[in-house]
Image 1 (cartoon, helix red, strand yellow):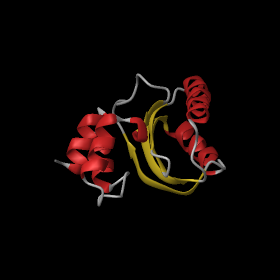
Image 2 (cartoon, one colour):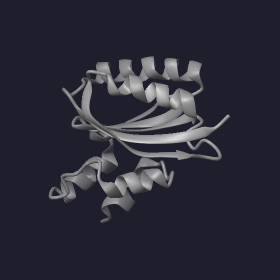
Image 3 (cartoon, one colour):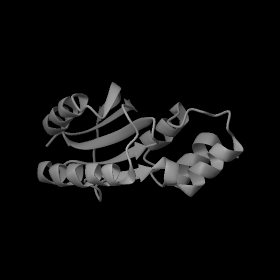
Length: 143
């Protein structure tokens, strides 16, 4: 099996309430598990950023479906690389709501001029698979 990771960002069409976000997570986790796909979704009411891992063909098929989803637009694939092993193998669909994450909110409060919640630095940290969100925030925004 040729494993790949695909990372994309998109703009949220309309903010999702907690129930809608949880429903999205559950539905996607169930579908991903059947397809052998793993990954992590970051959400902040304005953007999605997601890492998808799995068989190349299945990830590409999933991304085609994702691009047709009405819940977001301006979808851009940032990275699509072969990988030796999964980095999010424990999650068929991990989810971090950045608006509810205390560390992230603290950074936003202390550095309001940094209005790019899914910044390049966060993506870089995410790409390096340092997937504990507190680490992302510290490395992305500093103190």
